[in-house]
Image (cartoon, rainbow, N blue to C red; front, side, top):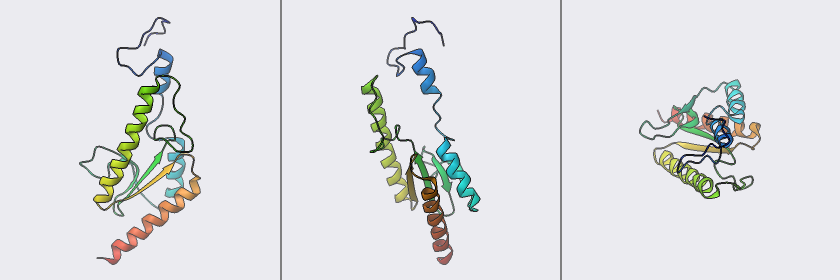
Length: 154
């Protein structure tokens, strides 16, 4: 990418400048600090899981943590990208594009939740700002309860 001040975004691009483009490309879609902290704490409690895995093979969406035998899918959502009611701040530049993108993310999240629930999965969603110990407690309780319920039905 050129550092040329005359750089112009391609037609239809979300990048309003070369610097904005670099910044947006650097944002992680997985292994964020909140995800890594929660994963580490859940692992310390003896639970094992898949990272950034598809709960359902035919659904082209990944959960941050997947507990396959217990059928629990965990998502740790970023406040901006998933439209947190407490912390989402509408963008000041290219507002139409980014607001529509966040809205599509929210709609996709609801659709993912529905499809997973219909397939018998428990979906746990947390905001990145939620206390990690509270998230870890809920995850641990849910996975253990579903494991116990599954072992009693066999």
